Length: 192
View 1 (cartoon, one colour):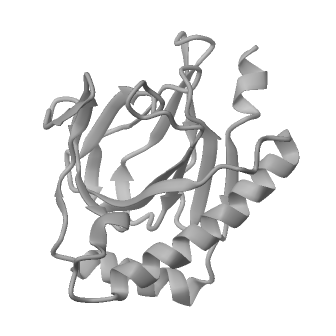
View 2: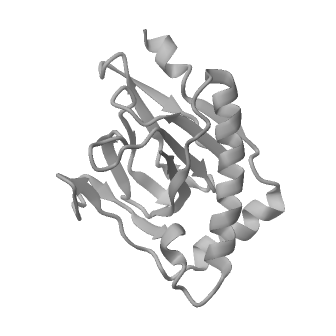
């Protein structure tokens, strides 16, 4: 069973050309709109730094920013991610009538982490989860999945310019281990 579940976690490398990736990373590194990331608990959001300690910048909700840079990157990433979702569903014969409902840039400073969780819930009915790794100039910050119904852990090698896609359901609890050196930048997104 475990091997079958792992097969549904797909890793796509070299998603963007190097220049585009570096340009986007520069935008992220200089952005002043990051805020503490919340968790959803019983349908409402709350801060709990013991569970999730990271900063987030929502590209979807950046329409009100004075700069169109966020809008550009949001639209660009929606197109890139939609193409990869199409590739994912060409393998697993899924429903292509999904849409991306959010795109967030995450910034994990030293000590930043996110405990084990799943992305689908009653207030967040997600189908697919995506994490796009922007850099690899940090230590720690590993992406782990629990497999075999929680009895084993499976580590995804996180290297820059890599997109990981998997089902958002209860079979895929995952976490980001604490960053021990440097700053980890990634983009998370979900398809409904």
